[in-house]
Image (cartoon, rainbow, N blue to C red):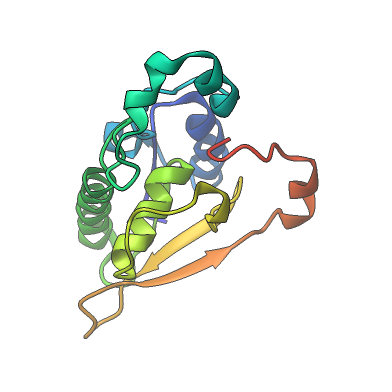
Length: 168
């Protein structure tokens, strides 16, 4: 790759660092690759918390936006803007066909994929195709206005031991 960039959050930095090192590239910390803002951040048992605390209920008033955090449309726009910018830097450095590795988080990756595929951005988090350590690629081809999406799970055998929490 011509560029290796990651969200400033620890897990993303830890994932991207060995990739950057393997290609002798600097690791670019990119704030726009960060996880979506979320009023329930840090809560692993949201359903139980909602039952115990009715004051949280208004945060769920609009699941299509979502009302509990950064709007899906804003997440996709932010992610696509950084993809376009870093793609431009990679092509400027290495020419057409240059590749970049961007390490982000499940929800922003998933809504970006939905946006690229022209699908509704609201969704059931349990049905996301974006597991831990998966690779979602946006492939830009000459003559195509919209990138093609490819998805791979190189560590699929390890997933049986992973947390099943959406976004974990």
